[in-house]
Image: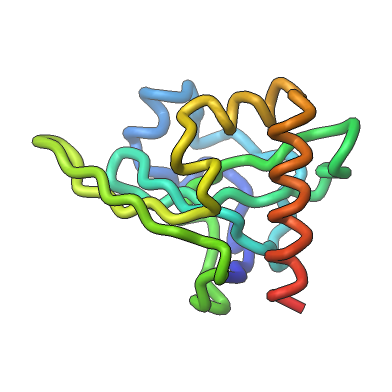
Length: 139
């Protein structure tokens, strides 16, 4: 799946993101370039809005930055083709009816993404492997 960045500010974000994350209409998402294309590595639903896991412009795979979940309203979907490495998980409760997709580890282990952010070798290496495979699909 491939997306194109339409905007990199908080101007059109749903208000629920302001409350939860402390974001504002005046903020700018650093490392996100308007009109640039990004590969999607997973899709999570937050507050009934899709959020795409992408690597922003600062991601180097080793020492700087990590993949980020960003609100779908910042992007236009260019190619809807799902990765062959993705699986789907459905979560349904009184407040949410969500279908998240991504590689198995990110859906099956609630701490996996945190491990990437913290720089844990196993999680970083696993993500790097899936990134490489998914990037090759989107050439």
